[in-house]
Amino acid sequence: METVLEVKGLIKYYGSLKAVNNLSFSVKKGSVFGFLGPNGSGKSTTLGIITKVTNPTAGEFSWFGEPACNAHLKRLGTLLERPNFYGYMDAVDNLKIVAEIRGKSADGIEDILRVVKLYDRRKSRFKAYSFGMQQRLAIASAMLGDPEVLILDEPTNGLDPEGIAEIRQMIIHIAGAGKTIILASHLLDEVQKVCNDVIILRNGSKIYEGVIGGISPEKMVLELKSPDMISLKEVAVSHPRILQIDMDGDLILAQLDSAVEPAEINSYMHKYGVSLSHLAVRHANLETQFLELLKTHKP
Amino acid sequence: MMRLIYIEWIKISRNRVFWITLAAYVLTILAVLIGMRAAIISINTNMAQATNGMTVLPSEIYRFPHVWHNLTFIGKYIKIFVGILMILLVTNEFYYNTLRQNVINGLTRLEFVWSKFVDGVLLSAFATLLVFLFGLISGFLTTSDMEFSQIFQKMVFIPGYFLMLVCYLTLIMMLAFLLKKAVLAMGILLVYSYIIEPILAWRFDESIGPFLPVQVFNGLIMAPKTPLFALFNIKTVSNGIDPMNIFLSLGYATVFFAISFLTLKKRDL
Image (cartoon, rainbow over all chains, first blue to last red; front, side, top):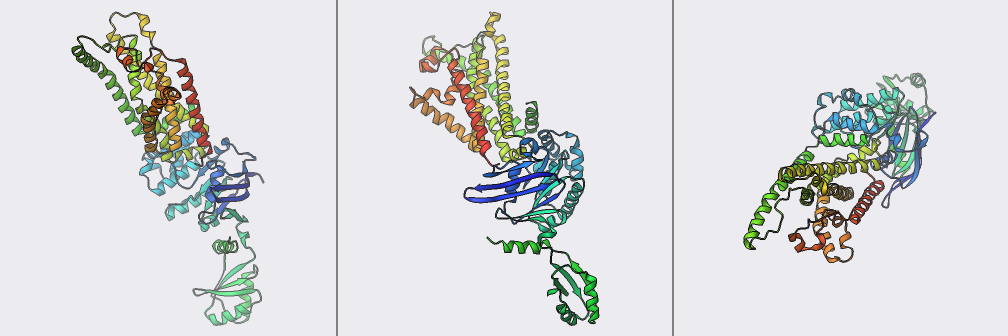
């Protein structure tokens, strides 16, 4: 598959602080690439470097298979950290400047403002916007002119739950159109719902790269419930493939050593006279995996 | 280049602070240019009374061909207004963090410095045009026995004034890029150009003094050669433009432009 972005041996020092430590990764065309990591792990610094606002101390990167230059930036739609616009200008004029710099037509401005639900306020000055509206204008600015690659750094920052859901839908929709999206977030839920590939950073270093499910694919958790919980516990522990059981409210969480058909567990329970009132697969939760990963990579 | 000018035009045309400051500049320079004549007549009357009929200033400052020199010389003392506009245009981009956004969207750092430099050139052109038109109109109104060739005789001060403004604004652009904050840039500009450099120029009168940037720029338009000005300091009086000053001014402007660009190039935005 074609590679959109290739980063090799990126290093960035702020004084004596190593913000990015020998980072290499690549983003494939058409993928939704998630950047994960706690605050201060080097996500934004890395995105700043690949969009040329931050000078790397060492390392190189290439866009679209060529050494990075400014012409490439015009093919990206970028939202970095917080929205930056001219406070005294309205949404339309602010986007006009963006269109002009990127060499795109200004015709799409009204449409894109409708998409982010700012059309009615398009003649208001930017500084009169709430933070959520400012963030939506920043998303509009990133999407203006239909760029090949979207770089979104914490795009749902400051949005209400409805706005967050809308942005998520938008990202899925754009990804469906074959665009490449690079999404940085410290919200695992956000990344989990939309990304195919992830990279996890900690203190500027890469601690994981790959597909989301692959972070710890061999484990599986089942939710079990029965009117006779005591027998359930006994029988569950006896099952050869259940490693341990935990309680979660009135549910029993059974950790299995590998993926098992739930039907097999059901018939096993039945055989020992336990009838189940609830049986479900608990999807591998990125958050627990993520925290585990961070624990094992303590500096 | 037209693209850069268009982008700057969108930014400037909606900027109310810019237009108010520009209007203040236009009103001030018109008031000073108009009021100058009355002031000079008054000074002459007083002088004549005190010295038994001797006048020290030519009362017809608007007459061709001297009008060009007189007006640009007066205009030189009000150029700080244009400097404030320049500071605004650059520091706004830091204040709103839009320099970063412009670069993210694909504007190169060099293009950015160019666009601000072009702002300075256009501002200078506007300020020069203002003085030129004022000179033309007042010259026609006050020169009675006029020969056509007189109009153009000392017009070299008009391009001289333009060059002075462009170079001066390049210095200010550099300060704004270096300091990022409007108030700071303004303060340093005032302290440097009105205190530090005059002291240095006076202290090193015989050596580097005359070659300091603001001295060089101001030296493009020396005081008109009248008995009064000649009385104070013969060195700052001239009825022409020294080619050496033109050369040094252009040199300084180039260096300031380069420093602006290199500052920006090295900086994480």
